[in-house]
Each structure stands twice: as C-alpha cells, then as structure tokens.
Image 1: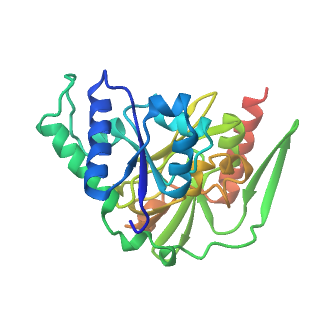
Image 2: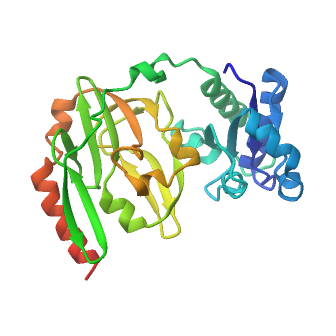
Length: 283
C-alpha cells in the first residue's frame, strides 16, 4: 500500500478469533508502521482516532459475524478501505482455529494468509481491468403498491437467487436485483468476496445485511474475483439506491461462461419470475 494505514481490530479477546485480530493489528504496526485504533478508547474519546482514520487507509478486522468493529466504524461514520472477517477467512481457506485464547500453528498460518492478502500486489484489481459497463441502462419496470422494481433489459443474465451478471468478453460484473434490495429494506453492511479467490457457479460471493436479514450473494458464474466495489464498504446504501449501477458487488474473470449460461435466465424469463415473487411477497 502506498498510503499509511490505520487498523481497527475486534476487541473480543474472550475468543480466539479476537486474539487473531489483535495479533494482525500488532504485526501491521510492527511491519508497516500502521496506526492501531483501540476500539475501547475510541468509543469514549474519539477525537484523536477520527483524525487517524480520516488521514489513512482504514482496515477493519472483525473476529466473527457479530461485526463489532465494523459496527463501531459505521457508528463513527468512518470511511473504510477494507473489511476482514477472521471467522469467514478461516472457513474460506479451511484453517480451523481453536477455542483456547492463544496463537497456535493454525492461527499463525491464518495470520500469514491474511497479511499476505492485505499486501499482495494484484494487478487484476487495478481500475483499468474493469469492464466497460453501460452508462445508461434500459429498464423494464414493475410496480406493486408503493414499490418499484426495475430490471435492465439488454446484456444481463440472472440466476434463481436474484443475482445478475453482465458479461463482456471474459469478464463479468455481478450484483443483486431490485427484488433483493426492496425485500431487505435499508442495507447496513456489505461483506465482499476476497480479491483473487476462485469461485464456482452458485458459490457465495459476499453478503449484504439489513436489520431484517443477511443475504448471501450467490455467484451466477465461475471464475476468479478480480475486483470488488469498495465504495460499498463505507456506503452499503448504494445497493438500495441502484443495485445495477452504483451498487454492483464484484467483477469476475470468467472460467467457462458458455457452461454457466445454461443455468442462467435471460431477461424475459427472470422478469416473469420476479413478478411472481413480488406478488407472493406482498400478498
């Protein structure tokens, strides 16, 4: 990273995942001269830490899905550059962490994986790797009571899990549909997939969360995650505003779209399915 970083770690030191979060923060301080934001002091005396967070790239490290650190950052209106969830990363890489409050071999391995991921130079995530997404979309609209559901007509495919994909060459951009954001209501948190991770069609590629539920984003395609919409880390409400434009989720380098396409729906078929879902949901 070119800029100096600040790190807000989980303070749940009664769990091993919290201890791992703390150890990563310490290593970032030792190896990268990172500023550590103490979550306990930040709650009661935030002036100094607000300045640190605003002047540096902020990494938030949650120990588990309670997401205490993320929620604290949200409460303080901090701009987050990156979020890491220890429990989710451990599952992704198949590294089991123990219940004891100590750093063992598995925990050291997990720490190394996360640190390497933070600092690796992934050229595929540069801005120039992004696909050329249409500046203007032609939407079909379905209204139900006070709710409006839009669906872009051209160039999009959809899966049964209400996730869209726009394909250009060997690259794809994915996101959720209006049906998802309307069903969830106000979206408060976004957990992205890891850049560089390999996904199969129908794998989870991140989650979005509102006060109602947590929604798992199910990938409509197979391939490698090359970019995520980092704006959603600090502004998850973009998904509510427009899940097709500002609120897209990730970009993927495709592995075999011709095979994936066989299990996807085109506009007409998905639009009819969406209308039935809306009618059933609003009965």
